[in-house]
Image (spheres, rainbow, N blue to C red):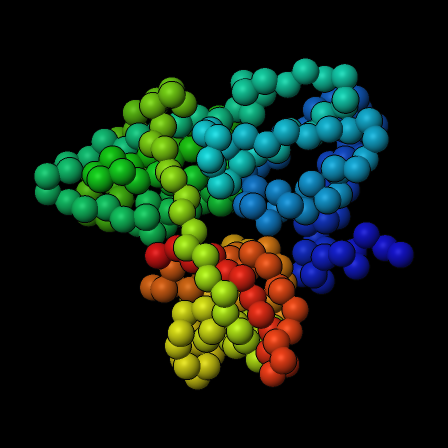
Length: 257
């Protein structure tokens, strides 16, 4: 039995990375801080390290509800605190009366600075307020380099975590049936669209599963998967509840957007 059988083939590289982090902490007796991880990566980290004796980990992304979080992996005698995660919260200052800035613009501008997605945590919106979390090690760089988003001139103001916008994640649950666990079939059932349309979304690169773009319509969905279809919102597979008498899969889903 190998550890990889519990994960999808495309996740092998990240599993190897987690194993390397674990070994590093075990051999050096020093904590290891990761970049921001998406929730699926956090699940994998928990699976690989969760049962390993002598090594612990903690997750923090700036707020209790943060989706993207940094992991601190450490020996079991180490006492960690929030400062160990080296996270900064920034609020955008821009001419709010004259321009509107949306999430894809913020992320696109941050990525255009030549930094990995893992250096940034959640991007938070509340009315015309926009905030984002970033790794402390890029603090000076982005403060100097991020001067515009779209047509808007922007500047960054550092904020304490206590002033972070609180996002309340609400999932509307429902029960659906699907003839298979193929991605195109599941999307068709969740979003109540034709299978041809769901295949088109996938082929056009508009679909992500667990934050990874998937262009294979026959990709098999699993319990706990987060599915994002651009323009349709996000959904998650809460439970795959066996088959109906008509041999269809009964799936409990949650949906946003």
